Length: 403
Image (cartoon, rainbow, N blue to C red):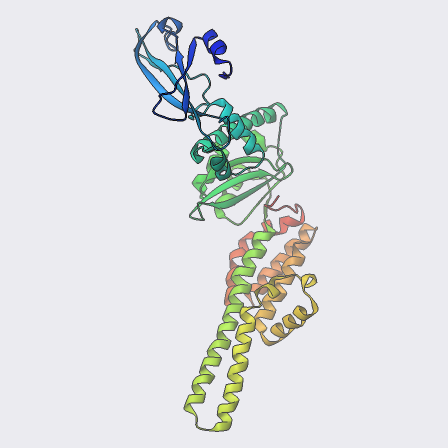
């Protein structure tokens, strides 16, 4: 790493000449560094033959400013060389430039320090007047370096994970997805890649030495078919544990949510029908009764629309008013009461520690869902029917995809 402080001494000793300039087109550039190296100082990196100079270049690189809210540039002039034998060309390196960027190492070290302090890229860009893509390249550079050192350390320590988690996450505002594999005991990310399909996830098994998974006891994942199929293919003896939080969230969304909205829609339709009835009949008493009933149905519709979290919360997280409201809702809606009881039983099954008891419990739970006659619950139970062993495995390995 070459810095340019006291540059008349430092650079002249290393075949560089520096000079102060005042008439540069860029008003923020006051230093020019010129290379004094010739073709005799280079040899071809491929065939080691002699080289000759065939061109020159000049480039501006941004330096850390002396004062806040100012810019500072250095102009570097060097040469390009071509091999007399094989024709290979090289361009002279800029000694104080951070690789793949147009900033000096002095500026790069400041950026690295700010990144380590958890400063955002946008904040660093505004603070140092550096484009965000440059900061991103520096961040990638230090991350690649840290990951390489980490991999070397793992190989030396004979690292073998025991519990893994596989999960997907959204990128680019949910339009694309990526998949990551994490060691649940240490929190280390072993692998991350774009996509969530079987072909995308198979890159994980092809990019690692499978002996790394020789001590694997269990792996936690959601119910993505590509994840479990590939683990059954490459690690057939490793138990798969389906994440309880994915299961509970899906049940709350696809069953509790769907049934609640269906019941609410029934109240709304009944209220609309009673409203039309008041227009058709001429009997004042019937009109009054229909209006009162319509008002009650509309009130029930509103209450159900607002009762999402009351139905999903645990009992011990509800206050007395919410508990009373919950009992009123369940007493008036049979399907919701059945789904709520299934939710409570699901929570209990995830607390079991005996595999056989859990397997029997999940079998009964699935069968009860299939026989419930509630379309959303029947569909959910049918989807999970093939996942019973993975659900029961939570009793032996209470792990999930969250760290």
